[in-house]
Length: 383
Image 1 (cartoon, rainbow, N blue to C red):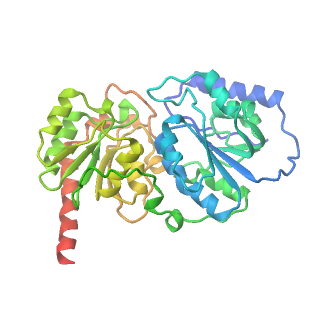
Image 2 (cartoon, one colour):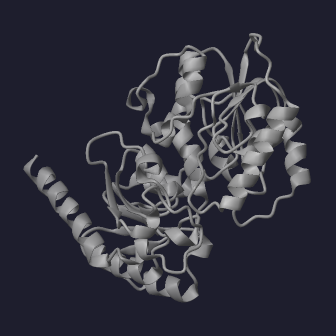
């Protein structure tokens, strides 16, 4: 057996890593792999993505490719928090819900409920993109499948019928490539098959949008990736002197005082907490420029092929987790390299210092966006 090349975030403690490796050795002793894995006829493929909205968005082009290239029935398992988007994907045959408690944000889920949801899943081949011991264990024990395919980089090698080679260091959209290789499917560049109309949305017909405007999204899933309302307010106020600004986010992204401040800025429309996620995507679809954090909405903006300015924290590896770009200069990263990002992202969810974000200044962000808007206006005027 080849030695396992593990992949852990720097914030995972040595004790936890040692425990996972110990569990792996125990599982390999108790569940030795057969020398020969019989071929399994596959008609239905189920892909599990228990994690967050950004993970789902980055997976969507690969799912579309899989549907285009094959006659397989393609099922997708997501959390209930991502169901509204996933249920609108035209290239998925069936959507199922499984709420892994260890991935849920702002919502309490139970393992009893999670197991019950997994027991409803029946498929020929099931593929998990995460390579997580917890995912591998629950999928192995509680779903009905003929072939379990996935990764062993965070534990659970013995639980898999087939271990795929993990694409270390590559962009996260490449996580499905080894599955394509196993199925003997050609690799297609996302730009060939992906269209911005593939991103689900819900039309807002009671609001007249300006011909040209930008969207600023305030939210991020973790505290360590946030920028601070005082920074956003300064930035929005200055940008609104040049272009109408629509501000998006959840009700948790701004308190009453902050909403009052944003509403007082001329040429700004505050949509925080007013619209569903699908309606918010529609607003983004109508816009021309986007400013946001390392969050799901930055990935959505990129998939809509908008010009994106993203304030990228030091918690994640930019080369792996950046929004996918479809054309040159589509994504502008505003990022500070700090010693504590470990070169690959520190992985922290909460950070008292947060210097990778606090070192980003509003004037820097304003200047970059205004230069872009000026060049864009010049091209239009000279066109």
